[in-house]
Image (cartoon, rainbow, N blue to C red; front, side, top):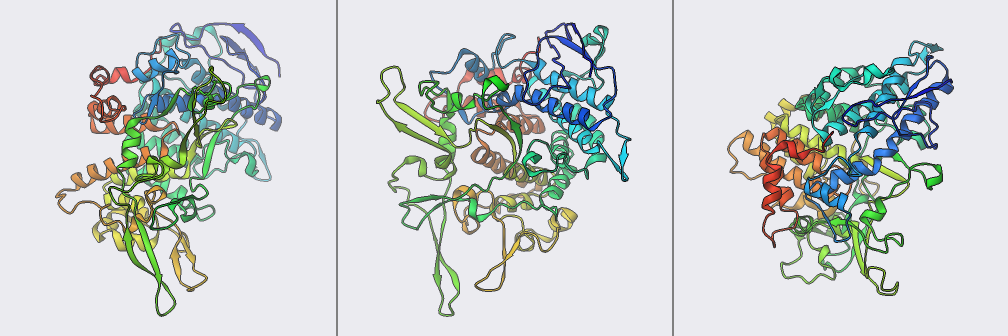
Length: 567
């Protein structure tokens, strides 16, 4: 494929488009201001797959940044003295144009590649009655929508265009409107809706996690747009799809071994990874991830990690109540619950991070050693959520939490709370959701009756096959009588706000270090039209033992300061 290169500035504000739609997945593509004209349609399998992997290559440039901006700007991560000036400016919302994490051109490089692909792929070509490129076409559209969403979350109002820019005259930013996150969501919802049933490309399981399922990005777009009923439906249909249902499984919880609370067992993770960005393993091949050098201790950073859990996260985690259900064998030989217990308030833990919710204890661990010498930090931190070969963007529990958020704002707070406490099943709907809400929920509370249940081989009875999200770190939450919607909430709006606060906390407990926190806070604050909601949480990231950072709080009361500068 012939490439015609010529130098050009895409936007006068410094937003350059790095275009390389034909770039191989593992190659390094020039990211200066080059403009590429391919001159022919993408009408062969080699062209379209080659271009598809070129787009995935471009996503590597923003992979680490997605996690860093989502966490460092939030309230659940705090920087250490080893943090770079660029990271400190991100945390303080004082980023300048030359900050290494402020590169909007990398997002526009993805968008430009997607626009080119969409404009040139031959979507009418058919083979045995099936459109040959429709899966790749839908995947590219989903990537474009996700990238614009990230751009708006990080930059506020951004220049918006959906056609490839192929001449210098077209690169004038004044030619294009500026869209905020809601406008972007409203544009892409109808753009993606026709492809909701389209399968992911490259059906081999090894490639499935490279692509964003259309239903998931549609759910996110509807959530940001305030179209909560639709968001709830998209998430519901994804999680309860009869061909591939997704459970919150009992086997993925952090648990105390017994009611003596002396030993913790960390079962295999329930948080199945759904989608992410594959990174290279060495710089020679392209872009590698450096998240481990920021969030963990490595020999490369002399064990001086730059960011970890904030005191606010530690306090939130320790404030949770762990409940252990004591079981016994009845005279009939069946297993029945006998009692529920929790650690006493004065219980002496072997590790203080075992107090309350166990997810933090299972994620971040600290050790101490002076064996490496004076140039190395004696404090060593590891983080189970940080991986170098793959930067994960979607997990199963990400979807459950967003579904709970959507249900709640769709006027179904008991349904949202049931997702947190009991898990999704036909029996929990009938037991814990009042008839009026079940009537309002309609199809949102209905799915295949054989999903989310399992056959107990001992008793030959049907049992729930899913658990509440809160149970992942807090034990037998379904038995916790204190974890409940208060009876004295008199209005539906009161219940919605109460449950939304619970969901916000659960997002922190479950998703910290996954790059979602600042977006979650931003979305809730915008919904409530209350910048102080976000400002107060971020300004208190150092915990209750120190005064609120008033300068940071006042800065964040102005929503314009939430965003990185485009210029």
